[in-house]
Length: 251
Image (cartoon, rainbow, N blue to C red; front, top):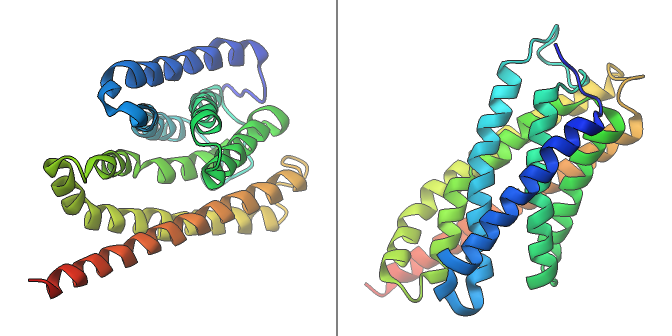
């Protein structure tokens, strides 16, 4: 099994290529695909780039986990393999470009900016400083990005729901199943994986391999991200029920 705690040549061969890929996708979205959106073309470009990251990241991470032989399939302290490191590079490139998008166009969106910085911190420390633990992070990446396709379609239609009747209709039809899927993945499966990680690291099974500062900071960052996700989908559920009840009163 090929491991890659940190191979500079490997990083330089993959990260810049992924960075250019996402910059190209964002530029195409901004200048071509969403050019008619006037002052909102950057929003569509960000969603397009997210579509090019989300599902591919799920596929890449799943492939990395399924093709990596491990003595203990539940180990969250195994060395990062070269394939796992490539997935981390892929996601770090996406979050880097999208972070630049927020800093330039949406500098007051502190939640997303902090989310991207925190995500980059977790991936970067796992990739460069620790060299172990990608197994658990990729499990969480799969759960986080499993909803990406639905969420981006939901977001894009939300931007145009007041201007395009089809967008409004798609948004209305997509919202309940999307919220349900998001609730199950982010609100149920995510905390289960986080609990397994906390139990594993708290038992001392990773002592001498993953530093305490690393796994503690990972758990804090991931736990906060999951909490924010739960609050976000809860707010959307409440809005959906409120809108439905309101529409029924006027029928």
